[in-house]
Image 1 (cartoon, one colour):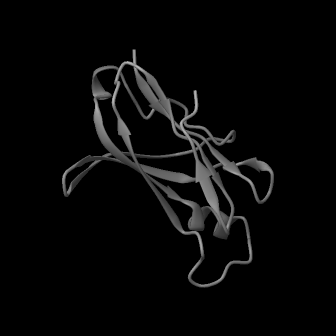
Image 2 (cartoon, helix red, strand yellow; image 1 turned 30 degrees about the horizontal axis):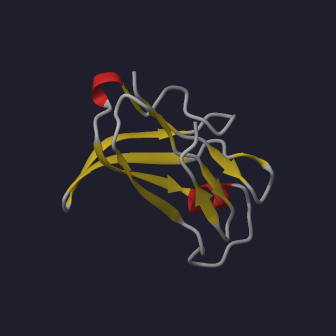
Image 3 (tube, one colour; image 1 turned 120 degrees about the horizontal axis):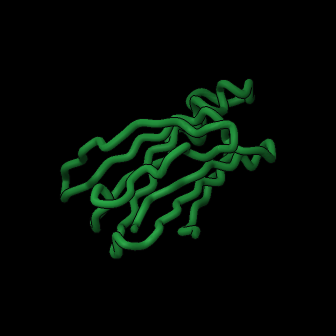
Length: 117
């Protein structure tokens, strides 16, 4: 059974990105449909998969990580506006029977991602 998961690592502070808001959208051409809004737990992960089973289908998706709000809550010294604010990751799912893990490594100055396992 396929599923979509994520986690967030705060690379500036060397810890999980806890209580970070995440939005998930399905994309279809120029349209964008909201699927869920959640936040990470104490370990920087979501308590359940973002999508799984019949709800997880091939197509294009967008994850929006509210990193600027997260770092503001950490009392980080940030410029106004912050350099890294909302991190938008658009990705495609070609095989909905597979596990797609899309982590975010983030600091107030940079971010990276990859397809994990």
